[in-house]
Image 1 (spheres, rainbow, N blue to C red):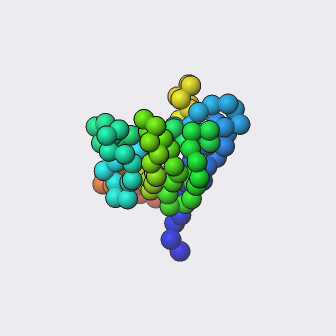
Image 2: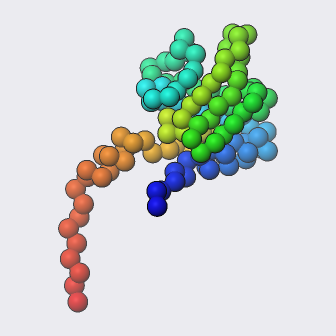
Length: 122
């Protein structure tokens, strides 16, 4: 059985908690990931910060695969689509509280680290 990522569940939970707490949820997106659809003039150093508050988006859907919505940038409406594996963090704009997500690169680096050689002793 394939392992399902916990990230989309945590994104939904943090989004709801921030909304209920009067905080503004933002996501930091790695724009180099395949499938990221955002307005390119707003990408800085390969990343973009998106406000995903209910008041700032329309048709927001946080599925297990993507976060998608419509939002305005300089008064012009854009359709946004972000694969959940491209989301680096979700945080509250007011206080920075939130969660970082492990990237594929971090997982690979951890798997390549030298594991301790343990021996079971009786």
